[in-house]
Length: 416
Image 1: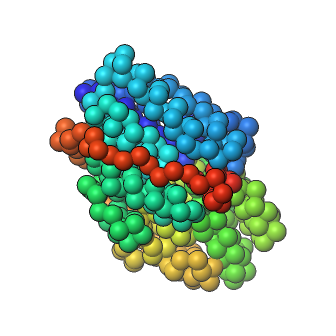
Image 2: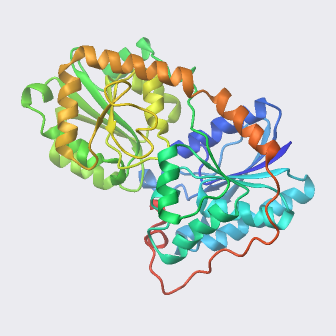
């Protein structure tokens, strides 16, 4: 079986989407799939705001082709980059035919996959990940209609959680040929590492008796970073004097979040790490005691399951894409969305209740070990590849862009 896998992010780019793409690629290769990866990437001069983007890294056993997001970054012209993806895939198919086209992320990759499928009469699978269902389509009329078009015309639409599917359905009124297939984590890599814990705590100047609260992931206000910083700042002095907030990651709001952190907390209350290589994240998590992600909404949170795999107790929000996976008081401590005082209350609970921290960390770790392995996900996906039919040849064209219509993603593509 030969698969054309189209992704918006691939290593060395830092993001949950990039991690998913690499891990899935390795799993498919291991199972004998002939894989061709078409990976979009942004210029590598965008700093932490650009996710550390660069041309995609090679991966043994697959052909990886980088497609620069030139027109998107230059003028918000996603459509022109979609055309490049389509023509690249057609060129590769003529040399060595594909059996299935699979896009990770609805736009622009999903649109490209459907257009390729229509041209070649092949099945087109589209995995919606999060922002492509939550935010995409709230920006302008064309993109609202485009999301509906994707769901209606993909051979198979994959959602990572039930609540995310329900949110997208409520927004679009489109059912499509859908399936729920959650993400996964490599539990061999993400595990407790006491040697790394000592090394990283010394590096971050975290005394042994301090409790380290960490956020690692996309530096985006929609991840609740403002609420996290302000919530931590409202803790009683007696708790702040024995704890430290660690923030690491990249994303469109990196500089603004850094400014809030610097202006809100005293220097001895935080560590700002910015870009941390993905291979070092398990070590960083091992040095921490609580993982806090007050996210507004998710499709499926890779960072939460990675932290849980390392045995960390989770403080997060009772929101779409989270409460499907983690249950309050059982496998995580869930608080209200967009509320700094709720974060303060949750932090107070976990900082002062050692037994609850240990219990939540152990139960979340057990949950991930039992349910979120790559073996289960990959086997299910292979069954989908084998069972779906080609896209209908009557598939219409996607909605046409109105040049006069304003769209926040065209004005700032880094948000998408």
